[in-house]
Image (cartoon, rainbow, N blue to C red; front, top):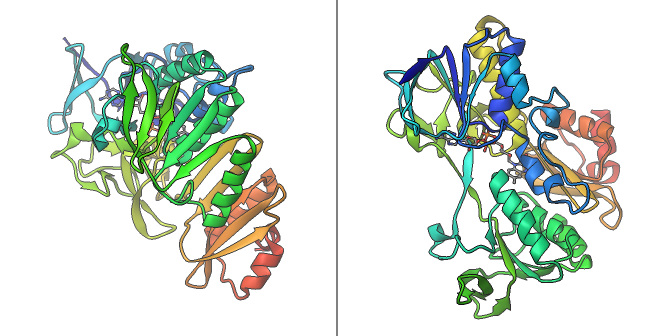
Length: 426
Ligand code: FDA
């Protein structure tokens, strides 16, 4: 059994959805494009899974958050793909790929050939077993990467009202899940080895603000240690966790957020890799000219910082996807990809955005006891990054623009004093 398409996208996540919309804007013909996804639903805005989807009241549900609503664009329902003659092959994994022969083999035994391939296989959650702990399969141990995970988490939260949850990991998945667990009336203890939450992005001062906010909502932080093992009952359910520092905590449920790994193994030995991802040029083209990589799997040149990066952020997925399609369909009018790193999160009543790089000297500004405050990073005398909590749309536009321009900072005190005002004046 075999089929041939001009364009094939492997993966049906964020990047695939935005690529599909861009293909239609560029005039793809019916029958030319196929998306192969091992998920059971059409591409959706993955960040919704750790936010609106977990709300106890008026939760976000599909088809409400199919791509591309996150960027205020059209919502691509399964019917949209049909109407545009785009073949959505769902619940099907690509099992092997041969980029020399331009051929893919799926788990249903189908061979699919392409002229241009876009790899959009995203990443997967790191499992506890990978760090030597068993028990991921227990019915009350949850991860959060896809719709099935989110559905399991919601069902588990419903069963555990008033009970105890252990959140393993202090990154954004851990932080967003902890907030949702509290909103669902569950007692939360967060366990992570670092001294501060969100240690890779936040300064200790920002972390302290969020940790204090979480504590005021009842979250218990257990830092500087890690999970060592689970305690199970006779039915295989987790009833407690043992920590490396010898403590034991009772648990009705556990949520694990200990990182992600890109899904790139199909192409090991066939394409060039860098920084753990598929190396692409500034047109998102890999070492094989017919193959493009976008989203979480792509290691692409970031003009802003002059290096190559792999970025696990939704904005990067959307932009790399659009750019790759433009480079394929309209190469003459496609300039070099120019990306400004951008990441955001929303928890409780808080909402922050980060632009640029968090390297160099740190300048905190604003009222850390109030609702609007932030941090600038100044490297080699230039503004290179900004984190802002509680900004309005105009503030975010201003700081993004300022960071992109990398203005020289003469007076650090002025930066501290003027805060967002500095960005507005750039
Ligand atoms: P994505 O993971 O979206 O899609 C990959 C697709 O490929 C999936 O459908 C997968 O099943 C499929 N696939 C993989 N291998 C396959 C194979 N061999 N055959 C067929 N299909 C295959 N970012 C941010 O900036 N702000 C935020 O608030 C959040 N929040 C957030 C919450 C949660 C719960 C997660 C998991 C992630 C975020 N992110 C985020 C990160 C963001 O969602 C992520 O960077 C993008 O989804 C990446 O888009 P991709 O399309 O690259 O991968």
